Length: 63
Image 1 (spheres, helix red, strand yellow):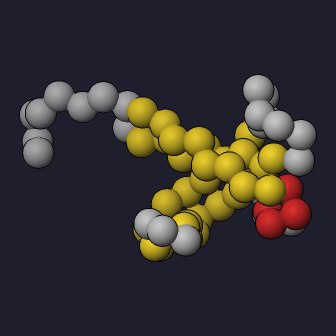
Image 2: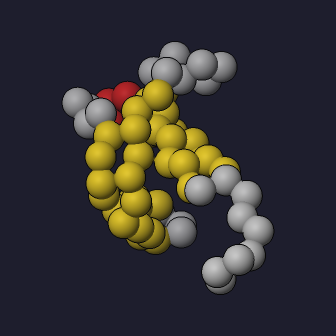
């Protein structure tokens, strides 16, 4: 709503590197086996610091 306070936040999505393939980020719809599909949103691939080897990580920022 106009004039309401907003707090920016980000979400990190992960998947196996084999699933991600060459996808580096962009606009799209995310799909989850239990949660279903949601989007559209824009994600960028980020370094998977602190995550197990073989993990691809993507971040979406909301402001």
